[in-house]
Image 1 (cartoon, rainbow, N blue to C red):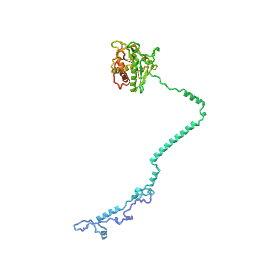
Image 2: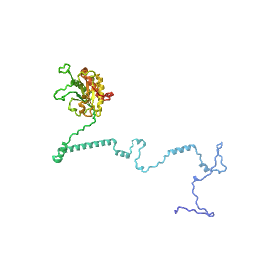
Image 3: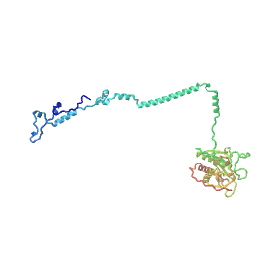
Image 4: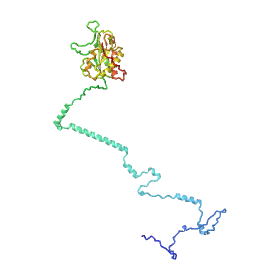
Length: 392
């Protein structure tokens, strides 16, 4: 136990108390003061229950005036408050007076800011580094290529490797596309035009095949030939199609290119006989392949040309057909995916004036029919079904 710890002890009534009295300062000694009552004459009336204060006490008691309070408040404001100094503040640089703080720079913050590079200089430095690396790589690649190109000895590659490389190069061939049974459409559509009876005739005994002729004087010199009419219309038709942006290919009657010919459409132009067959032997005719099961698109082309040709020329349609039209040799020769028709422009006897004087109208009628078939968005013509074929 600590020596400073005092145990309580019991003191009897007979035993005198030896505990010294604690020292109390004079200003803490309780005193009794008389009560002061204010009376009208301004004198003080002493309290009878209290002893009259001594002269010394009277001098120590002074009235607490209002001006003393004002003086105390001013002294309290003038006395500065004690501020605690932070730990380590003595090692920090002292801040300048308030009037100089606008130009003051903390040395520690200045060193940190100086150690960090500015963003714009860092971006420029990265771009320059990338550009310099790229230039070095390209320059090195050019040097290596130059060295391998000009200083590589002939013995660098073995003869066996050279022989295999030459064999591979010699066996390379261009790839050829296999023909497809389905039509192939390109951005530029191709149209083939066959000028009826043009080119070398099938019979080698004849130099020219004029087709049907009109010999009015029976002198053996025809005044009008089918070949001349067909040629005039075919040439005008080709010009109209070229203006519409089509690719046009002119073909002869027995042209070798007709075999498995492929195009967006193929038209063969012919003219009917110059014989006087009587009533009803007039007008134009349009015929497609009779095998509608595999050439269904031919009938659509037929319907388009029938409507536009009749409107352009004013000629009626002749519904009679002949075996030469139904079994036209071109139908069997061209590719199955090429829509093909044969057009009989009119009869050379009954429609002679139209055939001679209006070749432009006939070409325009066929051209509009092709546009109706190949570009239906430009020609809103509803195709009409063909009537059954009747002999005539």
